[in-house]
Length: 427
Image (cartoon, rainbow, N blue to C red; front, side, top):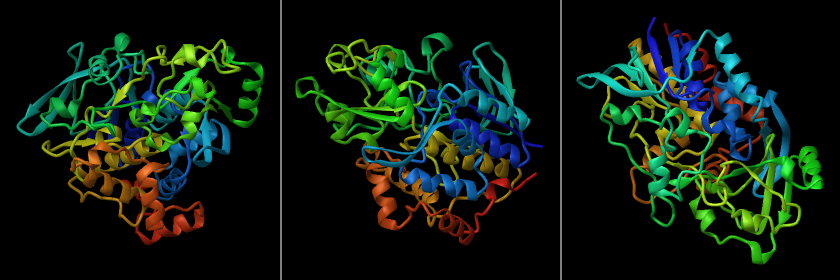
């Protein structure tokens, strides 16, 4: 039985673990902090726009467990907010225990507070990874799901300074890229203005700090849109600074858009508190995450690994990548898609079985292929890609890939010979 080592327990790492386990491997997830899901602990948006299509494709392909979890812990389903339709908002407080229990029930070993800081190589092959206490973890194939956000020096270098993002680098140590340690020359994405990186696209406010009427509506409907007085509005820089370009719409400059994910999710990377408190109903507003949401947010896309459409890293024989490591793909859905493919192919590689790529007739396959091509160009690396908006959603619609017809999606997957592909036992 091959041993698959996954470094990073975010959405992509958990997805990789599930698909590798179903393929027949012995799987261990090594997570730096004390909780799984990473930025998924403050995210919460699923199934909006083209993510609905991608979700149903993954379910039809046999990779639906994590989507079922988010559906089961949803606070609101089928809601709309500016630029987005049929969204599901999951509860950020309930989702991590649900995912952890899922992995445990599948027999996947999870080690938290296990920060991997180095690799042991034999030529172009990883033999083991080593944590900050000197413990070695040997494996046959490794999957780097460490993400691209942080550590603190990157927040300072490419943004407005570390602002205590959910990754909690000061407490658990900074993120270390395993691909880079193995010798992969990584890439850094750019903002529209040419500067490096991108800020996380939203903040969290304590509900208790907001006006009761706002909170009541938010709890009931899932969305609150509050016009911002012109004299209080921020400039459009915050739109171009976002990693989440699907929310780079003028509606998010002219209005405070709140989503209910347990906290009040403020759809802006930062908003000066003094200005925010001038908006009626926000006089006592306080940030939940990041704590310094007046000034900036965590910086992402500073460590992208070159890879092929199998999600095998270029330059290392037995390394695969998922999530943001696989390119400037934004979002939980996107991370689950890439992680699932990486996990399956890691087992196939170990078993010397032909690797699979997802056909471009499917939205998931087209996204992986398209982003892989675009990240090789100066123009492409300056963009962010997501099923839920911006340039890639427009591409989905142009290619006829976007649909909410579940029967049509399932038929498309069947015609692509990908039905239940992620439920196939390899070894």
